[in-house]
Image (cartoon, rainbow, N blue to C red):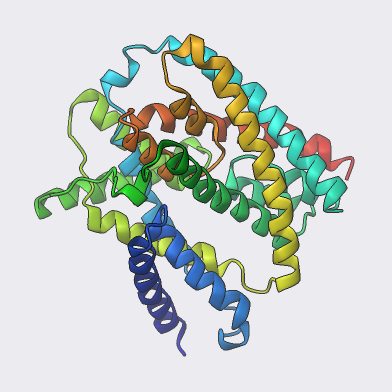
Length: 350
């Protein structure tokens, strides 16, 4: 089968899986449904894939930009009316990231028996693509790095919304039909969306931003929103397509991994994520008297999962999703900075 036709078929299958996941009430259905369907094919039927097949990276980057713009559009002037309250929670995030990385490293090194570079970069509580890239350069195992980083995100965006739903007695986030996208957007607005995406991609490249395919477009959308130049509305159908493509691309990264490796990685990830969520809960409880935010909002602001789903859960709690998003972006920046600063130092010990 030609690679272009295979890519199209995978996306169509992912669309069906996303629809089914939505009907089942799963969190982030248009991302997790395609991820599960593509991951199943990559693991169970690798012999059916053409030799050397990889999901087109440029296609994935285009739709990651769409998600970035959707998040950035939520950054409004109202968010900064109480900006001083960010200082304490941001300072706490510095400690949180360091503790999470240390906890994860101990899990992967001691329990998993991973070599040092693999354990160090797999332990990163953020910076998905940066940790994979730098980890491979440092001599880490690409398969294990990919597995642990993706399992971290999948488990957090699955466990946390379900746990909060049980605790509060109602569905949250995308499982409750919440969305950051606009319900009705004129086709005349789409050229502006395209130009903002292109401008964001250029900005991210010029400034060498971490996760530039996401943060560049997000920065452009935030600037437009904060200045009042243009309210960038992203239609729901485009957001759904973006999640289908990104989810399918993530699922295909499991190609070549054995079932035994995946099961072992899942067990390690469960211990890792469980510890990080308990730590996030402890920080949320400590910050509760000082920030003016509820425990729920602080918990999802610290939980090391997907930016989009955490923002959707915040929306269902009637909180500004940009507050949550800013904390996650700051967490990612801290993590990537730590990887850059310590990777060369650690590499000399590997």
